[in-house]
Image 1 (cartoon, rainbow, N blue to C red):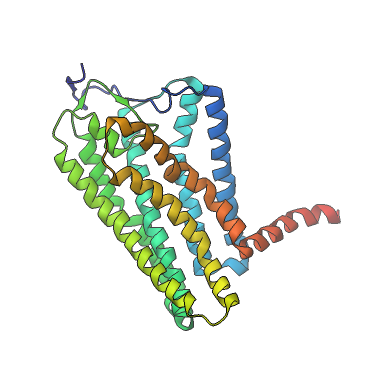
Image 2 (cartoon, rainbow, N blue to C red):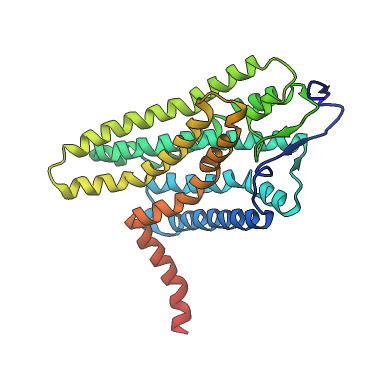
Length: 318
């Protein structure tokens, strides 16, 4: 029965990730689609990392942040997609108690880190456009490294605490998670105890790790837009905005879907909607990150052509 509690420490029944098992999707079709998406994420973001490391023209703060974002996207999708692929291939959506805890921790930690990285990238664009004469002085190598290290490390103890708080709850006999990965809201629905403290903790973390960085992004872009509108020529305005448009697209995709999941009232009827929205900030955004930056950014396209030419030219000379 659903109301019966199980001791998390003496037994490990794990959880069952129902994912999309209640939808008329052939496992082979789902496996193929998500495998293609995963390969696109791995190849596209790895190319961004490789290009920004190897091409000296991209050794500046903007691409330093982009390199870290692309690496983060690879890690982010790797916390969920491999397990989904195995479930589609084998039809077994079971995940162990510790496996679920690890997935929750890395998912929330990397998601929070992405929020902070996106805020750092917005600040970089703000300085570049609104204070260009002091850009090199402010966005020096040491400061950029501190921003990135802070983004990666600041949230670690917070998410360790939240993961511990969630997984010390007593869970009911029903371990069916109506999701394709372990996330806080669906896990709290399975708890056989009062989850008020967990809900408060979740909203505080969202406020600190997501809302505050988003507020910084909004403030930065408000000032950026004002500065761009004051530029004398259409060409200079277009050039300035083109350096921001890729980042703005990623912010819109990531925050738009995440906010719809975490800020609307959750109900049984909204479980399916939440799953599909979660696809955007965990899978679709990482997939589109390299596409948006390569299509919208001339410097990345030129660097990619140079990299490909280096690979092809030795063979041509032979």
